[in-house]
Length: 302
Length: 300
Image (tube, rainbow over all chains, first blue to last red; front, top):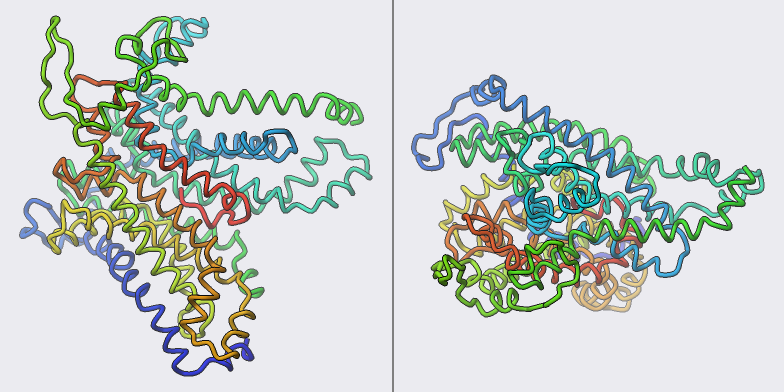
């Protein structure tokens, strides 16, 4: 490293610093400032229609939140939503990745089609969901009734349990490809010798999966689950666009709660305080991620 | 165990193929159904039994969106003018989305490419801190960014402008562009640059003629991710924008859904049209997706 750097002159160093200036400025304005401001707002009362009345209120935004039954409901619902989403995404994701890891004719087409939902705009998915899961005219109810699976219409988006199930389905549909991408990338780097050795030892398909593939996937699965848990827990659009948090408040999560406090109740301070609570939980998740992803090891390489 | 291997060899591939076909059908069905609905005349949309392939396919929904034709609905045998409808704004919103997406992507890419080069080729205080700071930045959900940024735009008197959205999207695209470009720049060998420098090329020449061409695949991948994130966002547009003329596609198309009369054919056509650009980007991205960026590279 020292040898490499010897060739660089002082003016050269200046170029290096100059290249950093746009990032530092942009990051200060659009990453650091909003986060600092969000934390500051958590300790203020702030009505966007009467900004002149903004005042320091200490911890009362937080005590408001902790006294609010809806916050705890949202928290619980977010947990349910996240757990089911993650379990299904991981199971489907690993299964699909294993299927796509085969040498079959047209596998590239399958891969393309199965990964596609990941980049479809959430607005589009939410609207399509509302169309196919429409209780009266939707194709899903029609197919289930015609197939004799159900005897009366399911109100997918207007009963609390089914609304939750529908948002989970949407989330699993959209984000399973993320798990597939990560697992597939890892599968492609598993040394083939490991499988050959296992075959020589007489291990069958199932044993080879349990003894060779799964241990190799362990690390990437931890990373994926932590990442996806953090993101899913804090998702806003997937819920808001499909159900607006309803019926009633039965699909609220913390992001929807924060949004409603800020927009509908005009309590930006309470919304910001909810955001701070989300960030604290997120930091805990990130620490787990940084520990498990083995960044320390990577550093010694680079 | 032998029986498993025996089964595997003889039927495994066929089973996998059939399973993949079934899975792909289920996964793609919502999109196929949306496409089908968008191509049906109004009478066929509610037909029983429903038809997957339209009997009388029509482009009237697309034509209405593209030409901004006035929409009517039937009421007691009479055509009633519904006044200004979202369909009239569709092309406008499409352009708005395009401008905002390209603008914010350009900023994020230029800024992060320069910074990534600097971070991986020069030594100074804080150079290892920046990438991890960015990684944390892109875990922060946009619901936390959006209101402080909105108040910033109010102070700058930029609310309800496309510029506010261009700047706002930088805060969600910059962190992962930075992380991605850093990871990519780090993987580019430094030797060619050194050779060029020794031969008397200036740093800017090296950057332009050697580094940028080598980094192009990384830049393209990061740009595609940034475009997807900006194009698909709803929250920022919903909070920053007000007037019909200035909306982006996501916010505008959600308006189609409001009111008592939902024109499903029109709505699905709008959904198809706003997904098509993403489909093209996706094709460009596919190689990069599986070719090794892995977990750190994708935003969800």
